[in-house]
Length: 158
Image (tube, rainbow, N blue to C red):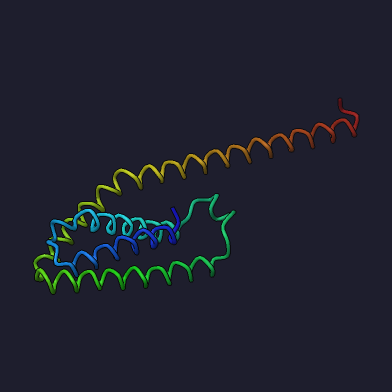
């Protein structure tokens, strides 16, 4: 998933949350939309962390560092703004203790997602890195073998 998709998912859930709060729904009625926003926020945070130390194959094939940094910065500010607005709405309508409850739920969800999804993605990245490394090793070994073969043939050793 890329940062733009996460922000789009979060924006959709955020609009749903705002309309539910404006309609006066209870916090319990908004758990689905709050959960979707939390997942998108968690995914975005994970992507931001992974961009600090990307896998080998992403270092090679991605765009410029400045472009990636600006994209993440802009999206991060948008996500922070949405988070602050959600906090204000929930704290205003349900009290500060409701926001603390939301943070506790969010922490549990983030830990669960990290244990399940993000670890799998790290394993996939490690497998891709290994496969690319093995491929490069085999190709360079083959080229080295061919070079020594023709060098020996040219010198008349075989």
